[in-house]
Length: 161
Image (cartoon, rainbow, N blue to C red):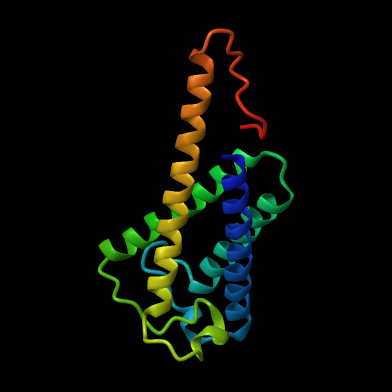
């Protein structure tokens, strides 16, 4: 299972690094929508993008250089959960969206339908959340089973928790 978790973490680290970088490029481009207030947090979109990019870079950095595999998976799980909660709050607020350059001019100029990137990011977040949930659940189940076995020391497998 550690092999699957390691693969999952490496893929997500790359995706997080990419999306964070694209967000910061967008911030540096200075699109007027970045001065508008976010409907959930009521702060300028620029500030929210910088915060999101920094969080993604931090999780990606730990995913690459951190030592504890299951902590890496848990951080990815938490970040995906935050993104999903934020998108849910946006929907509840009645926000319909605007031509947001959230991933920068690089992707804005690609020939995709309006809203395609938002859908893709949503699938990525759900996939990250569900993948991490399954991995963490399987790890917890294996740890619990190890603790119930006679002579089980509770240490479980290598990789740390």
